Image (cartoon, rainbow, N blue to C red; front, side, top):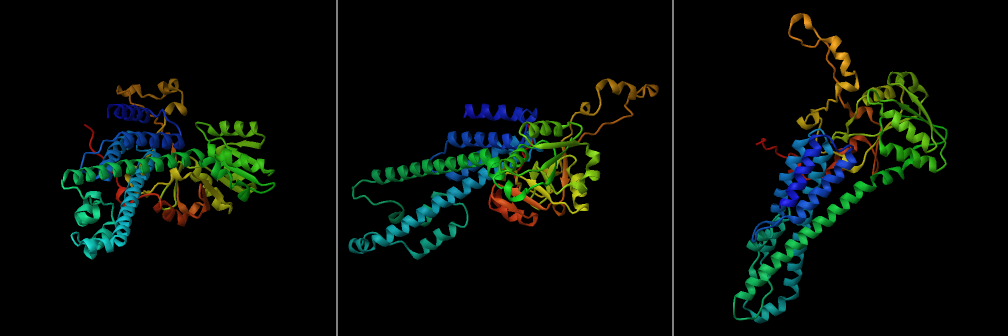
Length: 416
């Protein structure tokens, strides 16, 4: 797959150089790349179709996660696609078993009349039923089910037609499996594209007349949520913390003002002073963990503590692609991204902070500029996702609907 491999390499470089900004864009591009991998994946004759596709997706996923472990949306989508493959394979297998059972029942009288083909045994049906508890291959099914039930009988004298029938059935099932997987991945991409709209539709249920909303950071989801409430004739004011040192709050404030919202910019250090005037805190998230905690832009933990101190609801908006099945103690989550020191100090200022008297030239001043904060679940009042509002304690159940247990740990192969 030279074309797909070139796409993978190009995407890996973009992730390594941080050329893709935002979880939504990253999730969408990851899903589109995996769709291409599945579409062009060749499946050897007689192999486990789902297993081959899973290994291909897993291999690409390892490269993408290794390129930028901090961007959790990549791993989320890889695991979602692996779950989709397993679910579609299981669904197709179950349909195959159901078809065999119906066929065996409807042809029971003909089988008795002919007497030369045994009926589907109870042991074979039980074995096939047990196999539905895990993602089986068609080859495994055919080993447990008699040929009379697995392959339609032809009354030709040669065995070539039977072999061709088996080969045709396998090819047909492979095409059907890939088609179903790609269709479901397309639905996933559509969900990612429309997550802002689906979340924004719930704004009128949470924002009321004459309220004061506080936010921090620059989240497209938050912008659409607030503007959707305004379009429903809600009149409210927004306090925006500036989000130093990148000052993303300035960008957010300009966007809100351009769309007709009353907006007030405050410094980050003024959050505690202003929180008593606020009715609700509404923020975006980088990722939502399985225990209901949040990986969020730096500074949000301070805002969450201020909200808890003054009994102000702390609401997190997050698309389904941001729901991560990992827990905060996982190594992938413990990583933080350190931004450039130049966001805090000009490079020219460092020359005044060097200790040239010792001769080593080592700096006395160190600059640490983390990108993310950790907000524990006890500080979160409500999550609003594509599927509605959920308490932090419910997030693990919602996440379980989108991921398979076998795919929670994606092995990292050592770099060559």
